[in-house]
Amino acid sequence: MQDKPFSPATERNSQPILDVIQHELQDAKSVLEIGSGTGQHAVVFAAELGHLIWQTSDLEENHDDIHAWLADAELSNVREPLSIDVLTAELPGKSYDAVFSANTAHIMSFAAVEKMFSLVALVLDKDGVFCLYGPFRENGEFNTTSNAEFHRLLQSSDPDMGIRHLEDLDRFAAIGNMQRLRLYAMPANNFLAVWKKMRPWDSHDNT
Image: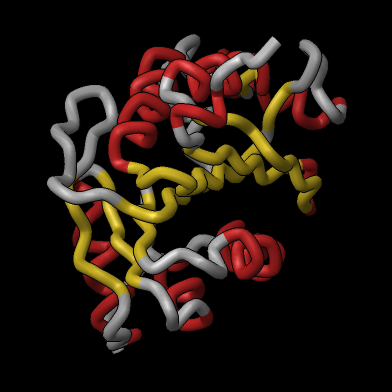
């Protein structure tokens, strides 16, 4: 077994996330993960979702960690990481039935979050889904005082970081013809939001 990084938070949230995406990705054949981090999620989810191909991605400096996890797991349905910086990324060269990302939006800049949604909209097939896990604000409010404190901590470290408003995320999604269908409450005051890439005729206003 190779030495590899370990994230206790990822260990804790993997099962609750899996419980949701097993349903949301049941018809998917290919998934792009944006910000694979240590690679733990990719290994856990690909092992349980054997019907699909899980494509990892992250900044180049995180690839060694992902390689270590993938090498130990030896899964045939998970792919070596692509180099993706959402601010500068070129398209991966193919489309996907789904995109997944966890705990990324609050540590990205606001501009990077907008770029991520633009990238997702471009690589998603029609009817594909984008599953985004993490803390969010809704109607301008934090769901807990601990998340409000977490937001202040993030901003004190880097003013570009912070817990995002769902309304902003929905606006970014709409630009790419995506619509939020579901919002799951998750442990540790987090959420998992699911947007769907709509077909052109589905988004027309018939009023």
